Amino acid sequence: MKIGSITLANPLILAPMAGITHMPFRIMAKEAGCAMVTSEMVSANGLFYGSGETRAMLAMSPVEKPLAVQLFGQHPEIMADAAARVESLGADIIDVNFGCSVKKVVRNGAGVALMKDLSRAEAILKAMRSALRIPLTIKMRSGWDASGNQAIALAGIARDCGVDAVALHPRTAGQGFRGTADWSLIKSVKQQLSLPVIGNGDIRRPTDVLAMMEKTGCDAVMIGRAAIGNPWFFSQALAVIHQRPVPPVDTAIRFEVMRRYADELMSLYGEPKACRMLRSRLGWFSRGLASSAHFRRRATQIRTRRDAMTLISAYEQQLLHA
Ligand SMILES: Cc1cc2nc3c(=O)[nH]c(=O)nc-3n(C[C@H](O)[C@H](O)[C@H](O)COP(=O)(O)O)c2cc1C
View (cartoon, rainbow, N blue to C red):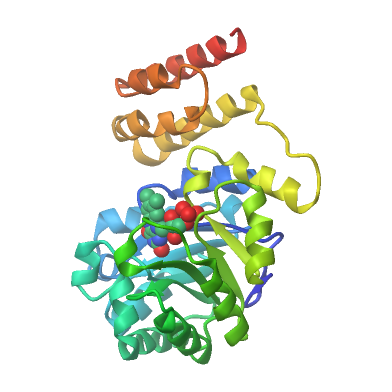
């Protein structure tokens, strides 16, 4: 698949996930074979008004290229200004959030609120397109009802504004993550608009990637929750795509990746904050493993890098000798 000038090595894309897809997480996904990674959603207003916390979310590394940075906001000029800043920092693609249904975001007229204010959506995309040289993409939901009419309309506007690809999570604004994603809408958008479409929603097993591509005709697939604590989802999905046996996750590699993730958090955020983050995040990696509840409980007590490394090694030994 091509997104503007960028050719993806395979059809697997890491979804943007707030609080999750920061640089250390994205590097894990990239190393496991994901073709393109997406940042957490970043506030254009925050960047414009100089928030240090927002600026810190833009940490990026050359190894994660191509990297899409997702922006959210409601003001065309501020979105364009933020996009140009992010481009100058080295992002490869700018993505616009038209899907966030969190109250605070919607109340400000950003995220999925823009799906019922299409003239503002258009103004934002026009302003951003003319401020950028790199590709521009959007990520949206079905809209405010299940018909998908707003998604089709927004995809048309995006195409006419020079947007290079559209990602669709086909759930309504009110649905949150409830119910199921309506993949038939991905097919409709692909059929009705000649532009690259990225399908998203409810990819749970590596085999679901091919199923979504076959059922909808989408050009690439965006994976969110299934990759949390499980970057190997990407290598396994690639094996399915290439009709190779799906490789099991090697225990030694699993723990090596956990240690590297912990270390990257330490260098990015400093030990105290990284330890606080690890208290909830290390548990992700133990999903489905023996004694994971005990590991998760112990992880909540991490105070130092040494605590984290000792806990990881102890769990590794326990599993290897089980
Ligand atoms: C914890 C979490 C945070 C998310 N944050 C964002 C976000 O920042 N921007 C966005 O467009 N979507 C966000 N999403 C939605 C995902 O990108 C994706 O559309 C959704 O999870 C459906 O895909 P999945 O079934 O593969 O998880 C988030 C989802 C989760 C679970």
